[in-house]
Length: 169
Image: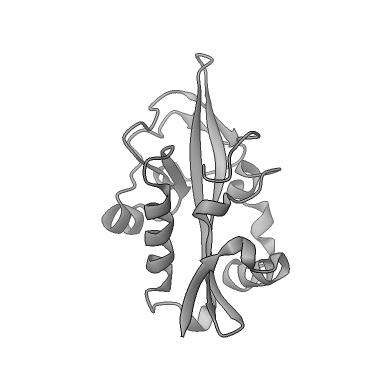
């Protein structure tokens, strides 16, 4: 039986092994890792799927912020990675994790992610409308920088880690 549990109840090394299997060991070079550098996953928004004693999936959400060129700072939540062990992909487990994270994030800061706009737009309401002027600490395909929420800042600025975040968001 598959159970969803808070990710902080799962050993960090088990999550790292899952991420290596799902995305490869070179994943740390990606821009998303620079965005969350020096932060911890938000406990109230990050989950794992376990079957028996085996970790089969995880989603992590991270505190980030947009520092506007005008001096304003907007807290955001970076969603991802969503990881499923390769042999269990295409079973809807990733959608289940996303739904849990989105429900837990309801009422909090706007959400952002780097991902497939057709998938995340169609199923979860993310789009690139407000992110066109955001700058990141590394390369990104502009159409893959997505956001969701009523107060997404459509401002020029730098997206990066948020150093002072609560456990919820």
